[in-house]
Length: 359
Image (tube, rainbow, N blue to C red; front, side, top):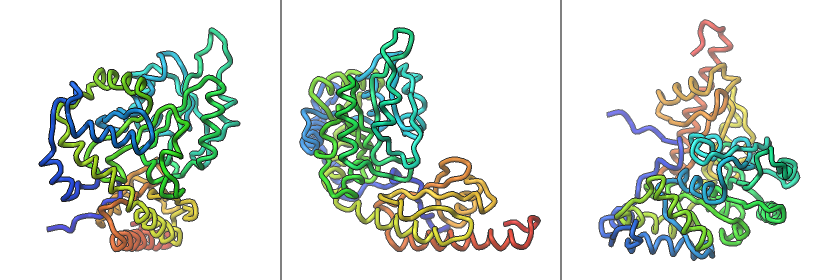
């Protein structure tokens, strides 16, 4: 039997732990659409408590969580300011436009971190012939910029100034606990000025399914109706929420291991021929590197790695992403680095020998 590949495509590929499976099997359930699932209710109460908010809502995915927040904050025909590589813009099937009827107003950054001065320039003047700016969205950590983290003071400044301008602020905090570990801060303090927050249980925290939205009671009541409209009523969802409770309590405790493993991988890759990355910019569990100097596209490069037992994902035609998570350990990371080293050395030798002998 072929050896199981090392899967660094995402921290979403993790399998539920034995404790999670036992909790799922034993979960007390009810109909969550009637708000009668006791396990879901406990999960929502605990999430609200951790973030020091009035209420929380369990949703099937981070994409749905972000979308219900966009819908709750806005009306069709309005504008949302976000970074040009934000997940809500690049990786959620254009739902902000196709479902919510919103126009994205994009800001280009080098590291995924917007500054207030950039945001201020993008706010539309009050003219009846122009779409009006309603919402600002931040992403922490920023996925497609390599898991970069917003400094809390900057996030608070953006919230304060946005509120002064009459704008709400939503946080796509899918990996906000990774940001908290990097900053050594509490998520409640980091996020206290945002009007809404979405965070994932199914990424670094290790649950098999689900995300949370937290905010005021009135906001969450609105989101609950929008979740139903989008088909997100999950009935006896306590069998899933039981794993989410364990993820919420236990998952943040070990995220530092993922960060250390990502840093180890980045440092190893930075020494290899044909790869470009700056390992000092790896802050959390995501490593993105440029492969264009290998002479291959990202898809071609990843195909070669897959044949050697290592999986990643393309960011674009030139960049590859790999993510450390709880189902890979230091030994797996060292082996992954060795696989990539062997492959890039083969490619470098082939280039040196001439184009007809390219691997």
